Length: 168
Image (cartoon, rainbow, N blue to C red; front, side, top):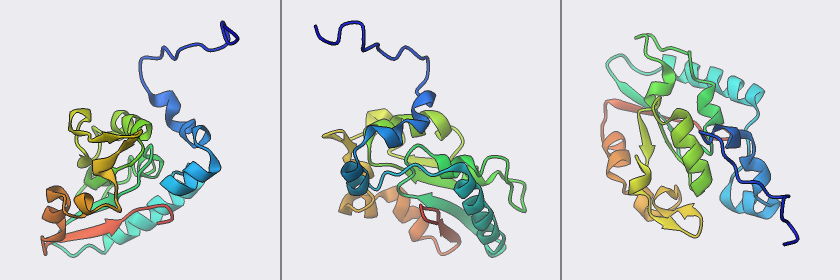
């Protein structure tokens, strides 16, 4: 009764407005525990330049992935949109991303899920939800390390893996 008329439900058609709010929703300690920090666009653009240089060094004939195990809402990856490799592929189309916090995952999936090569887990139906987190996207967990998708790239000698994380 004390908050009547003060709390209004979000009625937007997408979660995109949350992309910049996620960093404000967690306490300083929660951010540190989750490793969840918003990446400013100037930093993301500079990081994208460095990734583009790394892609240019991928040996001819090799596939490559740009792996961000803690992508948050995908701000780093958004800086890759429009950047192309020597074959004309958009760099973001080579990204494999995941994030541990559930609401970041929802924004990530909606924001860039159709632009990247893979999201771990690939759909919300594949989530193992635990206390507000996506436990099967915990980059520090044993399950993540043994994820068949990740192993497919790691075990392929003709695939170059570029780690794209904050800091890159």
